[in-house]
Image (cartoon, rainbow, N blue to C red; front, top):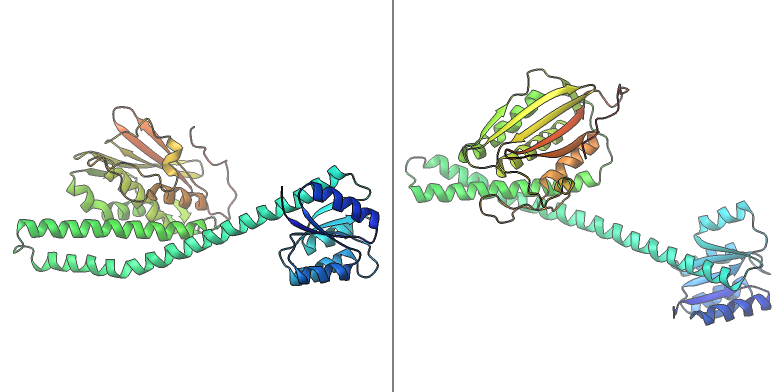
Length: 378
């Protein structure tokens, strides 16, 4: 039994009786009205879920009645009955918010179908709206919390660096170890916060990348420099063999640097001590193709390649076997490339490690492309 409350409004008593009988048998609570003003009065006195109303009434027509009722009960669903259906009437009804239509004469099956469809559509629209509002609230919350965490975290980082510089020789082994832990964990938290903020921004963006010409070798050098200390701590060699002046490509510099930093950080983190990371790049028609080969740990067989780029897909730390971070790094990379018209994929290298490959357009988005974008292997 459905239990929704319905007003049926028509000046024909036979139609009123027919609709009331059919709808009551289906479990609806039904109240009848013979004119528009009576239907309006009823909605002022009590709540209803749906108005089933004839277009032609003796006082005001069905569209005018529904419009007046919506000022009092904005959530009421409208279904229009008419024997004089025209395209203009249908358009006007839809613009007013009607969810269903039924043309006279109609059977009880047609009536129930129109009512059920209208109520279901209204429920679905409410669910979509609620989801959208919840998503927007979540994004605002993440952004607010992330920004609030940045200030104390910056103070912790600067204080640990200051202590390290003040007592480089005087600090004993334990002090140096503790300062290193504070610095490393603070940087890790800072990266998580930056990924959260950037992912929130990227999810709300529809832009297709910037138009600034960028030098790819400079981008990779900057990324390597920012992570050199992390690589040195584990004896990992990072070889940047991207040729000088390989190409100019177009994009937003901060986002492309973030792309490279995340991929390189991933290659270092999921590597073995003393391992290697090699960065190469080449031209491919109107695309720039970059490869980061990690000679450390292979991608486990139980992980689907495509799942690597889903948000919150958290992998195990290769040393501790514990899961850490939020699993946003690679999903941020994919989103950046999506907005720049690029592609990214990963490959297993049996017995050696793994490789991450991505492409970026070399031409400005305003210029016509000479070829279709290269597709990632399945």
